[in-house]
Image (tube, rainbow, N blue to C red; front, top):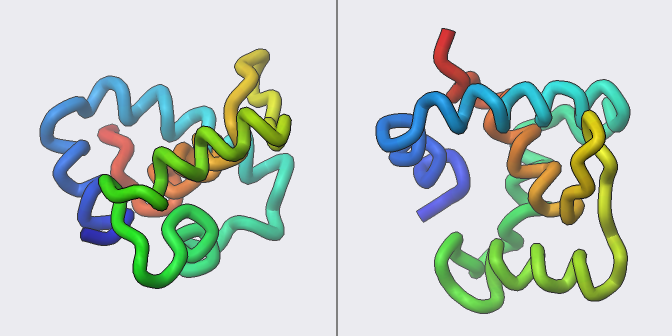
Length: 98
C-alpha cells in the first residue's frame, strides 16, 4: 500500500484529524517549498520496496528522525521530519475536508 492509498483510508476514519494535520502540512510546505511535490514526498516518506506498515518503513523513518534530531518546528510543534512530510502529503493530496 502506498502513502496516498493509506491516506485515502485515513480520510474516511478521521477527517477532523486530517484537517489539523493538513494545516500543519501547509505551513511546513511554506517553509520548505522545494518539497511541495507529491511524488518527491512519497519517495522521501516510503522509498521503493517499503510499505507503510512494515519495517523498515514509515515508522522506522520517524524513529530514525528522532534519534538523529532530524526535526521540524511547525506552528510550535516539534515534529520528526517524516511526520512533517506526512502532514505535507495530506495537504498536497487534498485529503483535508472542507
